[in-house]
Every structure is written in C-alpha cells, then in structure tokens.
Amino acid sequence: MAPATRFDKPGKSPFMDMDLVPRYADEGVGEDAGGVQISARQQQNLGVRTAKVSRQTLALKLNAFATVAIDERGVETVPALASGLIEKLYVNASQQFVKKNEALAELWIPQWAAAQQEYLAVRRLGDSGLTAAARDRLRLQFMPEAVIRSVERSGQPQTRMTVRAPHDGYVSKLDVRTGAQVTTAQPLFELASLDPVWIVIDYPQSQASLLREGSKVTATTGSWPGMAFQGTVSELLPDLEAPPVR
Image (cartoon, rainbow, N blue to C red; front, side, top):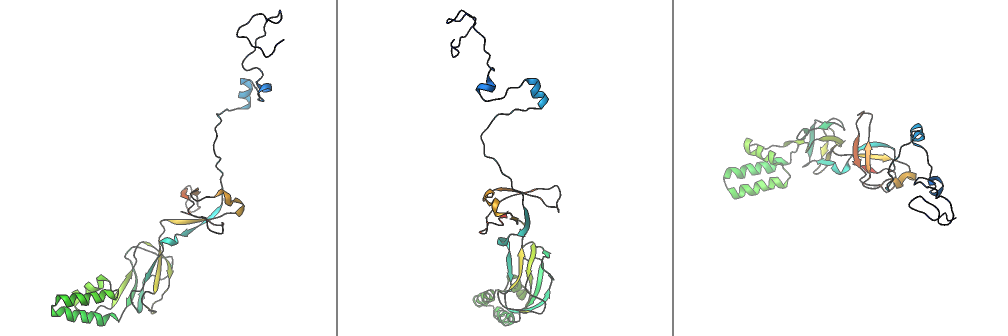
C-alpha cells in the first residue's frame, strides 16, 4: 500500500490488484487540519455564523466619569484703563452671562480731566500740529477713542467711562465692588468663553496606557439626554489622572 500516492481518476491500483478508493476534498478536515466539521443542518440548528478573518488592531474602550471645565486659554482679563473709582457695577456675581459690548461697570477717572482740558484749549487755537500732539497724549493715558470723540463733540471733559465686555462669555471672576478704588491695569473681571470647553476625565492609573493624545472620545451628559459629544484627547496632564478633552 502507498497511502501518500494520489491518482486523478478511478481504476486499479498499480501496486495491488485492488480498486482505488475515492477520497473527497472535505474528508479528514477535522483530523488533518485541527478543525471541526459539522453539517449544514447542524450549523442552522446551532445558529453558527461565519466571517472572513482579518488582521487589525483591537479598539479598547474606557468608560470614566468626567467634569466640564472652561478652556483657560480662552479666558480674557478686563482691566481698569486708569486709576479711578467704581461708581456702578452692572455685573453682580460671577458666572453671569454677558454679550459683546454689554456694560460691565461704570468707572470715574478724575485724573483724565486735566489732560482733556488741555486738549480742548489747544484745539480752540486751531493749530493742527499742537492739536494732534495733545490728542496723542490722551491716547498715551489709555483713553479710549470713544471717550476722546465724546470730549470733542461736547467740548467738556469726560471723566466717566463704561467698561464693556470684549466678547460673549461668562464672568468667571469678579474682583471689584461698587465704591472700590482701582489702579491702572488692575484686573476687574475675567471673561470666559464656552466654545470650546474642556472635559476633564478622571480615570485610574491602571488604565492610563489606554489613553493617547489624539484618542477619540465620546461624552454624554444627563443634561442633554440622547445626545453624544465628540472630542479628542488634547493633553495628558503630568499626574496622569485627568487628561483634558476638547
């Protein structure tokens, strides 16, 4: 017998006076290839489904709690342009939403009076060179253009100015109260935007290896049921405890 010898058609064995035994393509799959062979009926009864094998990287998921925080890079400080007195506050507490150009406070700046009176006196002389120089001195005192134009229209010193919001946002910090004295460049407000915001993820260090900068993140919140917000990991903080997501 020569079991390793194969023939392409039926007939007698050249080695022995015996008929050749047919062998089918699916015979011996379970034994020779280490597989399992079941009939089509058994596959249907067992609910077996097949799919093509492919090589790919497994995507591991991490579920964690997170908190929403403002993007500190978008926080803008609103300072006092000159020393003066807070006569009125239009914002009474932090977290108040304001729109661009909305009034935040009324500031009285008595030191502007002398420079404005000098400018008006020079302007009446009609000397364009002296007038331009006096106007520049007003700008050097950080006097807004709107205040200077008001002086020119009224012919009177304007020592009160309205501090306005530079853009839409929330007042994240309120550093003054009505009646307070302020100095030049002293911070009065901090204004934060909510577009975009940070999502700060709290996760155990044992799962830190699952996070990378650029990793995709899906966030959900009870405040917006049924909605999902997409973002990416922007930075892994040094303590590896809370990476912000934009």
